[in-house]
Length: 178
Image 1 (tube, rainbow, N blue to C red):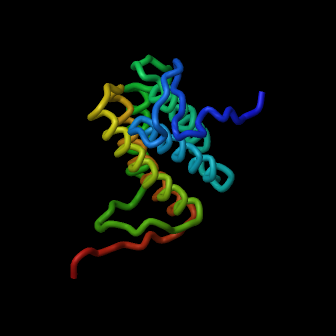
Image 2 (cartoon, helix red, strand yellow):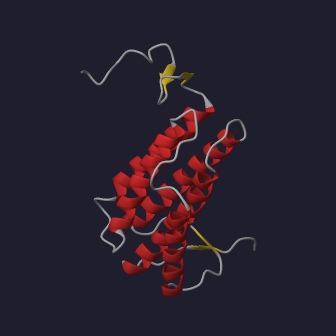
Image 3 (cartoon, rainbow, N blue to C red):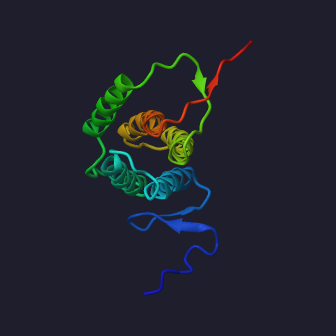
């Protein structure tokens, strides 16, 4: 069976269960943003040398689960999305934060190549979160998805900071107003 189906040639696509939606529908914007985030994390993996490589792969699996849930027009329970995932990110962030210098100013995204990519993933995550919030105002979705994406963007930020520290790259502060 070829990868192309020609069923979307007129600007619509199918969801799980067969329902079709226009490709610019809020549900597909949310699914696409989560998919993009997953791909960005895939770009990071070959460069990442830190201890959280398995955590990044676990995040990818969770994002796939979120995409599957969003692709269903009816809320469905899919393994991998819930309070335990959120608590794991929070616990990990607490450990990272304790090992880093406290922030006194905003920092500019960047630093090492891997940290810069993690900052990029953070911004894509924030967009995915916004798209899911938009969808949630029109249709019922699992609220755990929004919470998970919110924590994930914070976790990616902390991972970028940790990566800069691990590679001895100084973060550039933005002092704000003069």
